[in-house]
Amino acid sequence: MRFERKQSAVADGARDWRVEPVPSEHLESALTLVVGAGRGGPDVAAGVAALRGYLDDDVPAGHDLWWACQGAQGLAAALAVRSPGRTAVVLHSTTDTGLIPAEPLADLLAAMAERVCRDGATLVQALLPPSSRSDILAFEQAGFGLLAELIYMRQCLRGHQDPPADAGVTFRHYNARTHDLFARTIVASYADSLDCPSLEGLRDTEDVLAGHKAAGVFRPDLWTLALVDGQPAGVVLLNQNATQNVAEIVYMGVAKAFRGRGLGRALLARAAQLAAADRFGAISLAVDASNHFARKIYDDAGFVEASRRLAYVRTAQSPPAAPPRGA
Image (tube, rainbow, N blue to C red; front, side, top):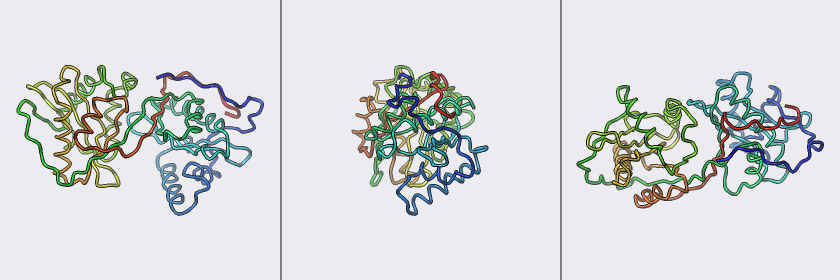
């Protein structure tokens, strides 16, 4: 994964916008840009209200909401939603309508990401539809790098039947006593992994665990550690979707020494067993499109593709971008 700011097609002298944190009197119009300028309707109003609540409750002075503007007219806007584990997710207005060039969005993304990283975030990320070519260009111009193409998959649990137990595998749930064991096993699963391998070493393990806990509703009884002959070998972390009757696999990994033994399938079966027992209607997950081994396991288990997104990230170690006009 490379982090570099791509050359803009707009000359510096032609940049007639400025980039800044959104002033309080313009929050509503900036949030409307983020949610979906021009669409209107109750969905946009509800989205603006939800983001306004986030700003009011969680963000001091609203400095995580930025825009590129001409006078008091917003051209593009973006909000960095901070999460436990020192990460932030970018919500942004789109340039794919063709009404504005990618450069104003790129300028504000670069400035906002640098501020958020200076304030302690180690990773700033965004999920973009593969067809959003103009938005992709904006993120690349802002110094974000492509982490992975993610495939979102789902398995219906209707009529689920538990598979036969594997006599050589035992399971433990997450709790304070097993916390360190989970942490060590997760780190061991990163070695030569095909699932977003460039993330290895970018974040502290405790930050990683905090991020996994914050993805949906944390359920320690649904986090499972697999032991093979008494040795920690793999994990599957299952959370509850915050709004749907769906269990989400937020992470699954097998330590390198235990790969090739069918443990991934055993962990997936265990996750389905727990989810079905808790009366979830489905299980969802995201997998790196280049991880063909994991995709084969999910396909064989009956998971079907729902959508794809490109994960773009910028880290605290990324080279600083050139300052945009007005920053």
